[in-house]
Amino acid sequence: MSIGISVSPRVLRVLSLIRHLETQERSQLGQLLPPDITSPSVVSEEARAEAVEYFQDETRRRAASPSLEDPFIAGLTYRQYFALADDEADALWEDLGAEVPSLEELPVIEVRSDARLPA
Image (tube, rainbow, N blue to C red; front, top):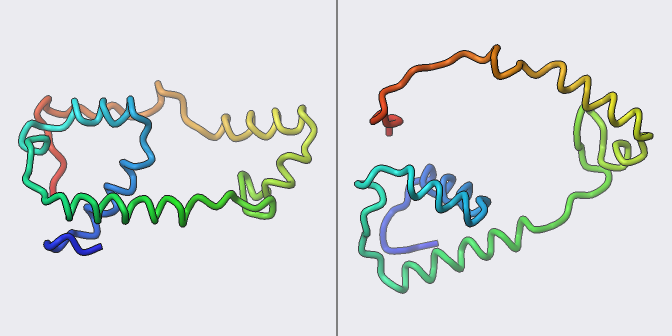
């Protein structure tokens, strides 16, 4: 993708993550961004079209469904997981859930309302 400027790999990773968001989540993200980030910027139509083409190509390239032999969860492949009896699958999820801390156990980190992540 050449849009006439050098685009940071971090920016490309963020754009890749954004494309996985649902429409409502994108809207929420737009509302949470500080005004200086969401302010309109001038991007040529050619650059915009190239960017859209790039991400459409990436989406098509990554759209392949996983194989039943691909790893899924807790060391099981998709095939092995789907072969479990209902009670075995329920037990697996309960075991996994037991390893996860409850919300009350997670630390609370106070931040300023205008806090920003470092670049």
